[in-house]
Length: 284
Image (cartoon, rainbow, N blue to C red; front, top):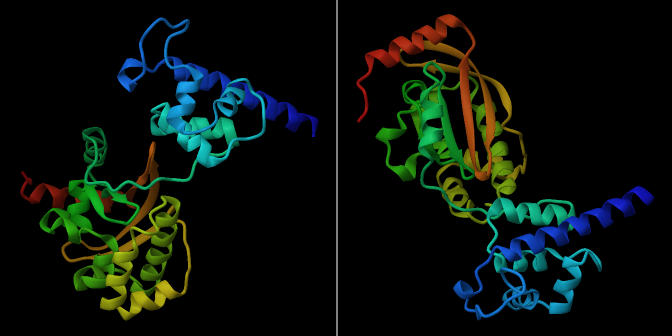
């Protein structure tokens, strides 16, 4: 009990120090406040409280390490008032409540050049970046050659669930399609919830339920899975049977994105994938 009390007290002190530091970094004039004589740089406490629409006394107590734990709503208001970035907002919640904030899902249309270069460096390993709604937004040449030529599809059709349940070629390439489909639906459900995108997947789920009775039945089962690691076997139309180990990775600072890498189990499979890529035309 004593250790917990000391930890809470220390966190309140760290929270107060963090709030004071962020407050001093803001420009009063840029935010509509008088830039007249001030004893310290940045906003005054009452100005932060005004922007956050909270009591100046309560905000002062927070900076002084007094009072109880602030509510998530209060921390969100303060984060907006102090114009915190996502990582700064997360740090604010860790200090104030001992946990990160609820995820705010943001739709993604692409990835940074750095991430694309990372994918391209994996020459014999199909790799892709997917959103929380399982839209594929980036991939390498190995993925296009082995999995699906995503570049040949309209952006709205580059969705893993649409391909699994709606593309006969993708379905035929799977060993034990029923097991793959059940796993994919469960992992998709977990990813969407983790990224705070439950409401965003509603339209896609409704569409797939109309188009695929199999998807509708699996969705009703409410299973969840972790898309962490495993083994995937494919029937490739040119290379024949392929066995690959896959691993899923979170993209730091982007809860809406995940990277999946498929590594050929055997050196022979890796060489066959390289040979196939070499024989294909380079996409512009």
